[in-house]
Amino acid sequence: MEKANLDWKNLSFGYITTDKRYVANFKDGKWGEGSLTDDPNITLNECAGILQYCQEVFEGLKAYEQEDGSIVTFRPDLNASRMMDSAKRMEMPSFPAERFIEAVEEVVRANAKWVPPYGTGATLYLRPYMFATNPVIGVKPATEYQFRLFGTPVGPYFKNGVKPITICVSDFDRAAPRGTGFIKAGLNYAMSLHANVTAHANGYDENMFLDPATRTYVEETGGANFIFITKDGELVTPKSNSILPSVTRRSLLVVAKDYLGMKVTERPVKFSELKDFAECGICGTAAVICPVGKVVSHDETVCFPSGMEKMGPVTQKLYDLLTGIQYGTVDAPEGWIHKIM
Image (cartoon, rainbow, N blue to C red):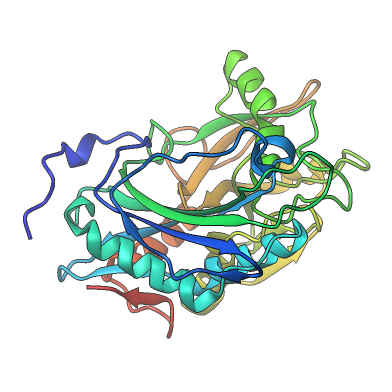
């Protein structure tokens, strides 16, 4: 298949309009049929629930061209189930998992020429999302919703690729205790925007958010989970009810344990422990793993022994194995790779 005329190796992580997107509507207590459309625009009533009370949830996953030319997605069942959990917390109807995966398949097939060629380092980023559409003026859940899914080809999330970044401990809280930090809703990301702009203005690449109750435990960044490697080779990842259950992080735990034979621990991680770790990274669908070389707090700077020049050796192995699984050069655990074409 002839690919779109793009400079695939130099794509940014930005939006490019592709040919087709999927749309389905919820009305009268049920989901309609759903179909592909050419139109990337949305028309809404001025009083739509999404505009008044931010009833919205979303997901993010990728389609890859593998070494043999196949086009696949990575563990879309986990994205489907997480979106159902997010919708439940936001008092929205769940979009059925089987229909979620069918929508992914339809959009990828219809936009196959936009799936970046193998070896370019780019992917087709898929964005499923759902929002309230009918007029709502009182504070209550809407009764009508729209599910949409589009794809856009993207390059690396961070401009410097996999070179270690410097992050700061944010003075702001990402989520409230017993709030919505564990779901993928736009309101959580809106909460992080001012903190991100502030961090960038001060010369940092990202934020480290601490727990809002005590501000002593590490949680996540505005859009990625943390992983740490101890000096004796154990993988440690923070555990909290306010952390989004990242598909990438959950997959890395399996890779570390089953492929590398590492000890893997999920537990609360105090900020005061950071100086004892050998490596640090942030992980998510967009970045896969981005190494962290330095964390700056007001009165303390933590420099990880892995340094600022390249990924630490264990983080590099994890990155290579996971991307190898996604691109078909490493055998995948059963059910992880969903072939579309």
